Amino acid sequence: MTNNGYDSDNIFAKILRGEMPAHKIYEDDQTFAFMDIMPRGIGHCLVIPKAPARNILDANTDALASVMKTVQLVAKAVINAFSADGVTIQQFNEPAGGQVVFHLHVHIIPRFDGVRMNPPASQMADQQVLSANADKIMAALTQLQG
Image (cartoon, rainbow, N blue to C red):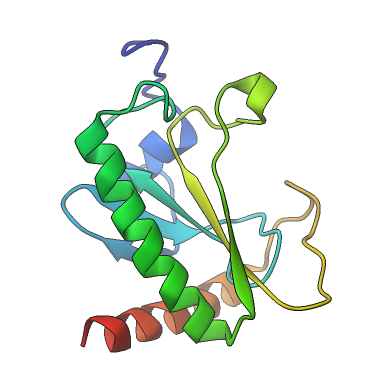
């Protein structure tokens, strides 16, 4: 462990190194966005910085700004991709704050009027569904950036 308790073997660090699979939806020099494998709703995805950061409390402010720029872009894309009525953005810090994976990450969850979110970490999604949802988001990103 380094960087204020940052564990370089956390699942998101492994995804960034290509040691674990992920359904990528967006990547730039500083951020990476991918589908959540235990979604709280259709299109639930995550944005993480490429730079090591345990959470928002120790993140470099430039990396944090890049994360939020990507969060805004992806949030617009998921709303368009799924014709969502809104979006929930969540970010947790330390165990008492609900953080489970100790690499800074922001949840983006498309929301629909009258539809509740699934409980956290309740069910692993079908990989084909995740892949199809990733494709929808990437198509929406292409239109936004067009």
